[in-house]
Length: 109
Image 1 (tube, rainbow, N blue to C red):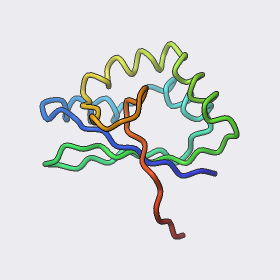
Image 2: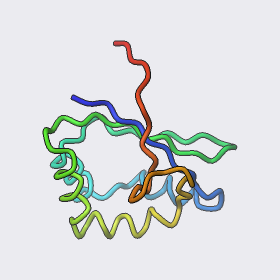
Image 3: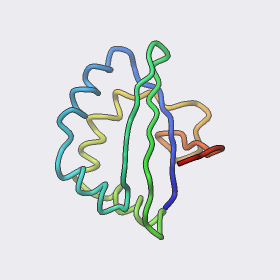
Image 4: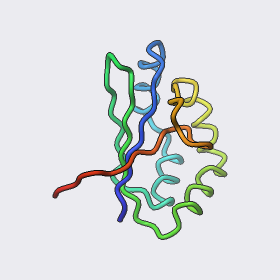
């Protein structure tokens, strides 16, 4: 299992929309997340900085393949058409990233 963290900005005028979307996340999208070997997926909001922090645990063996399959899923792509306009990607993110991945520097159980 690999713990993964990521960060992205959120547009202040889209916070309520983003919360509303996630309060009723689409079952097809949740199923795709599970099929992509992602567990314990959580998104946190930090105001007034307007940052979203995402955390998940990856339980698969082919992260790139799982992410490619998720990215090719029509229902997930439709979901992203609703959520992406709410977000403000960080300028420092890597090429191809929407959310900027973070390095784990500490963990304890």
